[in-house]
Length: 129
Image (cartoon, rainbow, N blue to C red):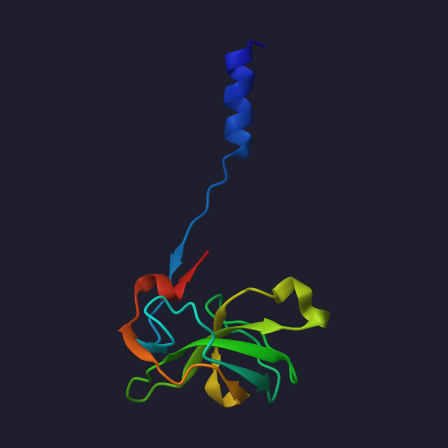
């Protein structure tokens, strides 16, 4: 086997393909702490378990701490959803994953940002990979 063929084979095996699935938008606008939604708005505690219905959402367990990064502005007839990530020593594999959950499933325990901005959502806010 020649070296160029081996290199080509290795590059081909290392190259991962991913397909992004576009999901329906849950809202047209969101409330964030800054224009990039990089600041944590608040910390909340899960009041009950929530099982994610699809890849836009995160699973949360009763009692878990949830860092809230944005709050979707609800459309008429739609549910109220927030986005965030969980923190729990017991569920380390889920830490850092950001997803949506119903606002009714959590209780805010500490607010960090009083000044917020309303920005439009994009398709990337609701993609699945």
